[in-house]
Image (cartoon, rainbow, N blue to C red; front, top):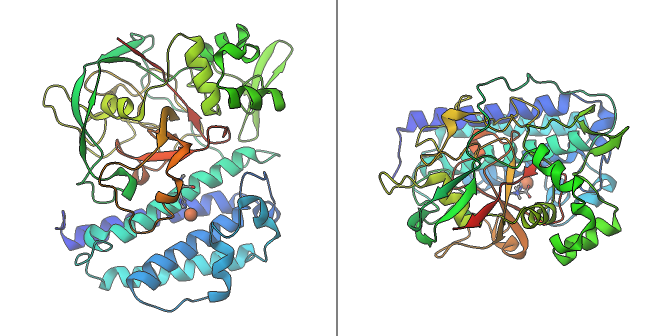
Length: 434
Ligand code: AVJ
Ligand code: FE
């Protein structure tokens, strides 16, 4: 049953779609047509592919599936099916050019707004609570984060700007927080725009454990580097050791050493690595190795969610660490408001009841867990969103980065990637048994 009035649902869906498109425009209007069609990294699509793919997914789900319309451009659909063409091959495809891609996405959007005014937002699982519209807004925001990663990989003069994070910050805090053992509710059956892999709500038990109050900082990570962490196979899972040897990796991606100082490239700017910021651009293997060196381990996905959502006073799981209220700029560093994580100790208003900080926003956090379905999982609305990725080859990331929009981030949200990946906006925190 719908959780809000039809007019409120319509307003919410329209606002989410509009916010996503404003962000997409910012990311794609900032660069030349040449930059839009270039391959900035074999790991990424050309930006112009993301742009037309955003429009095509919107057409497929809202105009074709929901409204029952015929395809506007059947000949382009195979080009924008992520499963038919791996990212590295996409620059060679006969893609729509920048102007054409923009026009196509805008035309779809115009028709979608007409549809949104006329469609009842109930009567099917796709329409209830405006889910299909919310799913498409989240999809566009996810690709906006993907495009921001492409911007980070791009060489050349900076084109993006944003204010520095400047909220309250109170380090040092107690290094770790004790999370009591016992049951808590993981996942959700209530969040109207939650995606299939977050469902259903179910009870899980944990032992008591300690978890870092804040994500691991550059200063802490530098101690691992200085201690020879990248040269000592004791800390590394075998495939991770192989990766760092083969590619001569000795620091997070985008870092280099100059005259005894660690510098990094961030959206085209070279700057000293800031000590107090959560470490970014490490693989799961680097996170796992750091934790082992520190005499600790990565938290499981279950532990992460318990630290983020369990309120010991009520026994309830909240939507976010700070409660059930939607995120505001005081709670978390989300939505590309800044082009970096905030210092560890920021966002006191975003703390969990137990006092864990910065679980939402700043950096995606690697967990020790494989990406697996919850008991009772049902693929919805398509197997290719989550189900085909379940298994031991993908590790779960939680919490969202500074590049995640609030519409695509909550205490139950699950992201996943290969453990070798370093270009994503990922860091981590550590845990230990009691
Ligand atoms: C959930 C971020 C892993 O980008 O591959 C976008 C999201 N799915 N289009 C991805 C997604 C289809 C997905 N991740
Ligand atoms: Fe997609």
